[in-house]
Length: 108
Length: 116
Image (cartoon, rainbow over all chains, first blue to last red):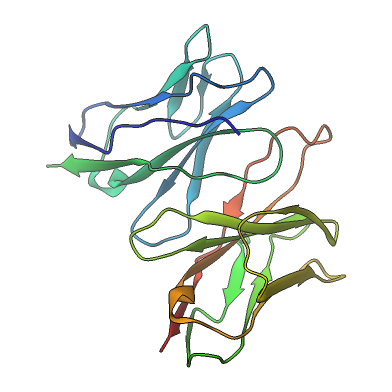
């Protein structure tokens, strides 16, 4: 599984967009990019995934660069409840390999 | 909507004892995963089952074993417990796509195991 690199922490003002970057320069052609988040000791929660194209759902948008070596998760209007650890995971099929995610702190 | 159920939610054991954690996946999900998250650490994959057969194995100690039963629930059995086994244990379930190339995993609330 490809390795990912994320900033250890980020702050965001409530109501503003939160943009969380992820580098995955060793991603292979059939590997997906997944984003999960974990709110204080709760079970990780799926946010979004993508392969090549940008994706959007009710929670977030995922922007993947054309060379697929990096991506950005966008929470369009961050709320205090979005404070969590955000994990960018690259893989194919089965298990999820969690690396060190980004602690996002949303502040009022 | 039904979620993944884990029991017990909290468990306290002594060193060298055994523990059994249970996981009930979302109905109709065919795959179960187990993850371990130590204090201040990120979740680590232990083992997974697809249609009651072991499908992948991570850094699971030999003292641990797991299985998936005919009703798709899964159990993680842990023997000769050590202090370092104290952790949150998450179960997740998914329904693999027909191509089996990606899947969205739904996590349970976890079992917090404390070994004294």
